[in-house]
Length: 64
Image (cartoon, rainbow, N blue to C red; front, side):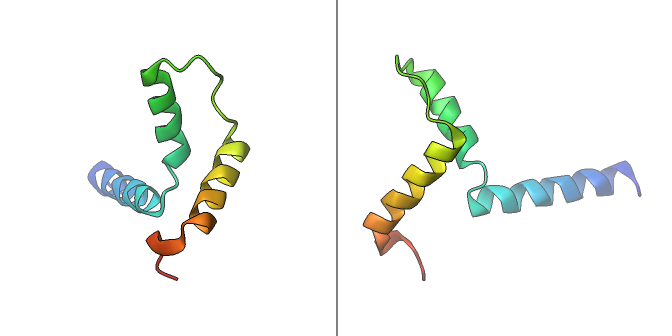
């Protein structure tokens, strides 16, 4: 497989992961670091639990 095709497939996979929100924890860590927050960031497990709890409390943003 050519390099261009491999790069295209990697980009496509990255796009769908971003679309599905898989990169949310990475974005959270980046934001947490950039704001200079004094507290330690949530663990990945804590982050996803908090995110799901917030979505359950505010379901208007979900399609199903």
